[in-house]
Image (cartoon, rainbow, N blue to C red; front, side, top):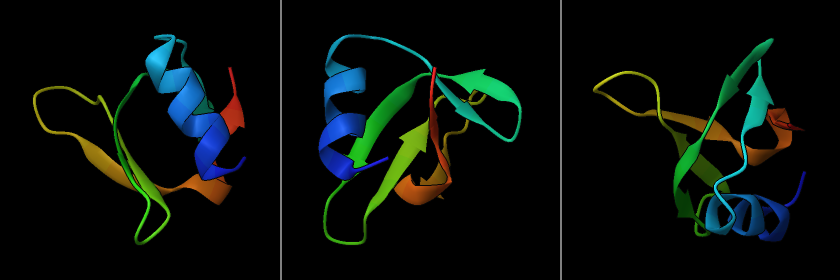
Length: 54
């Protein structure tokens, strides 16, 4: 997945798959190519390359 694809999924409130679970993206960091996933009360930062579409 690319950072642009992640941004589009975040804008559309569509989930992504990370390690077999579904998460919503709540933030995108283009400087280091990561996103923040909604995982409970604390977000989880992961590399965009580790995500799969829905």
